[in-house]
Length: 213
Image 1 (cartoon, helix red, strand yellow):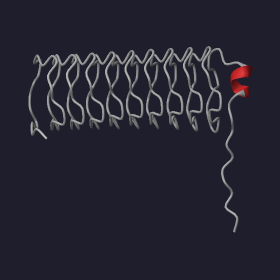
Image 2 (image 1 turned 180 degrees about the horizontal axis):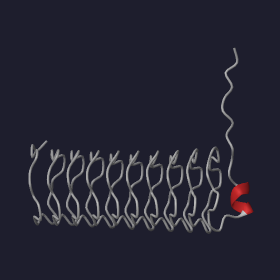
Image 3 (image 1 turned 90 degrees about the vertical axis):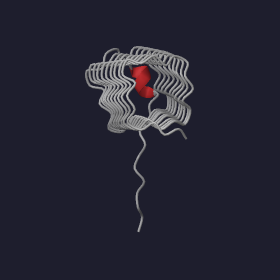
């Protein structure tokens, strides 16, 4: 593994760079141009990438826990199995990105663009997607327990078999969204826009297991 701790590449040009498995803990990569670069398996915990260009970059299985990714361009990026727990992705462009199996527990995605993103089997527990764009996104079998979707656009999104326990959809646009087999326990759908009886009828309520003595 490359040791590049606390490095400063602020506004640097690293287009198509191979940084697989590199150690970038706490690195300063603000506004850096990292388009189509390779960060597979790299450690970027607590790194600052605010405003960087990461379009088409590969971060599969990388560690970005508690990193700053505000206003970053991650359009079409490969983020499969990436650890983004507690990361700040406010206003980030993730259109068409692949986040299948990623960990986004407690992440800030307020106002983020996830149009057509692949979020299948993602962990978004307690994540904040306030006013995020999720139109046409794939959230099949995602863990959305306690997730905040207030005001988010989920038109045509796929939430089939997702766990929605305690999720908040107040003021969210769920027109044409698929909820087949999704867990309805504790979900807040009050004031959700375009909610239909057909959507409700396809959700399921999972009863808690009783402990028999």
